[in-house]
Image (tube, rainbow, N blue to C red; front, side, top):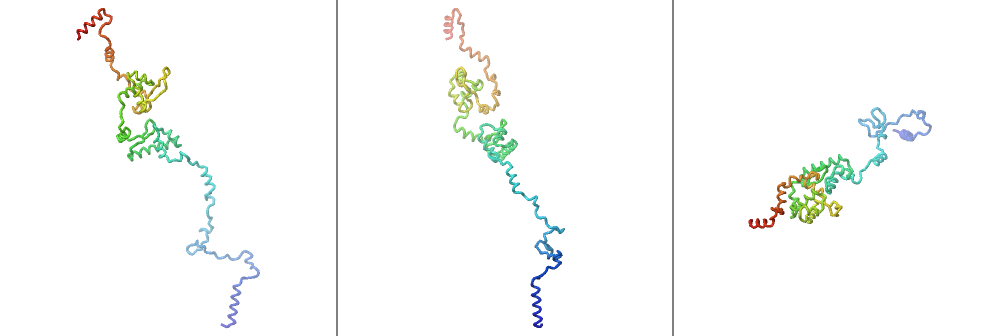
Length: 292
């Protein structure tokens, strides 16, 4: 190749590399310019260019803005919902156990529902579940429904252990004097201490103090005429005897002595002679001498 030919080729290459300067072609002005080649965006498969369009050639709609979560709406909903506070926020079963540990009488489901701010159905179900759990685990105590209320009780098979701890050498049973005094109070209540002593025929001040300490009797006002303190039996007395009320006390008639025995006792101090007889003094003296 000659040197002139080589220079001509270099000049032609330089001219092709320079941008076209001058008027824009008519095809470009009229909008008929050729479309630029599609660039591969990495979304295509099997040799097709990824154009972000679906199978029909329509572009993807992108995320649905109508169904996107609205943070402000969610925040408003959270603010409107009631969040349990205080007692209502506590776990139900442990709360029930805590309350039942301190009750001094069976607690009804209505009362527990009011205290714990729950529905009665929730309380009822939770109590029965707790009772079943204690039975399955064979605990030393049990949860029982008694007199329309719930309360913890020691299991009967462990009564010896409880008695050994509670009594600890103390006398377990009431004395005969205490039982008699308690019976007088039960059947004659409200009754004063002096009246009880009169019925029994002995002073019962010490016995009454024992019954008060045991929680079997309690003070119930004063007698209007004398101002003496009156005593009645307690709810604990009914509980210990397994009674629902004083009307379930047994009748006294079967325990009273027969009329003949009462009459015989009443005749012991009556003289066997007629005090108005004429020979009263001599007859008595003669009969006495004869007997001796």
